[in-house]
Amino acid sequence: MKGPAIIFLFLLVVACKSKDNSSTPKSENSIDAARNFIRAALDGKFNQARTYMLPDSVNTNYMDLAERSYQRADQSIKDGYRAASISVIRLVEAVKDSVTILVYSNSFFKDNHDTLKILKANGQWLVDFKYLYIHDADTLYLKDILNTKIK
Image 1 (tube, helix red, strand yellow):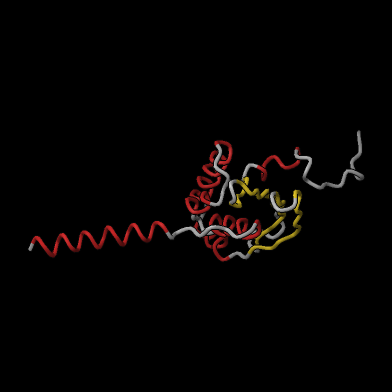
Image 2: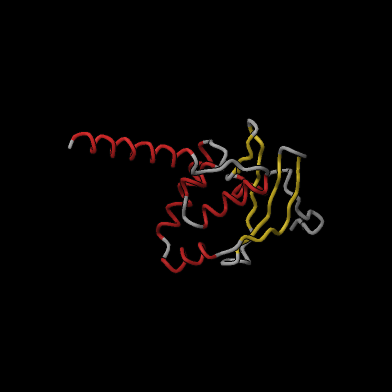
């Protein structure tokens, strides 16, 4: 009886390890990284979204905030996010081959445009999530300064 139990336990451990290693594929380019990040967040898979995010304390704090907000949302809102498609509004390669700025929306809240910065760090494309909150202060953000009036 001991033999079959040990074999079963061994197979269970091997199956779990192999599943964990292949859970998050590497992004091939900046758009792929952004899509993977946004899709995981819309689906409520915040641990997966974190794997596509630049790991720093500010990004982690913003992601924790987004996750708590998502968890408190009504089920109808969660279902809307999960069913939503992603629309690219504008794409700017701010620094060729290393920094991309993406303005996007989703079909659930289509009038709400968000902005992400995607960076190539250590050979991997990662989303700098904090840029969503601070992009107006960044000089890479292309905003219409001609319509700005001083009052």
